[in-house]
Image (cartoon, rainbow, N blue to C red):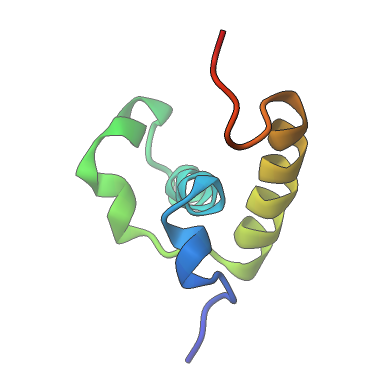
Length: 70
């Protein structure tokens, strides 16, 4: 059973990170735990993946891939 349609490439990029963070928060875990391994135990829903894609798209407008951080 597929929970979402996230691609392998997305899993290891901004979309995967954002989707996992959204799933972590949905599961009731505090934001303070986002930097721990616990975030890996909650699978993002399709809605969370879709929201993460949208967020990553908007964020990319501010900092396009391949550009240096000032």
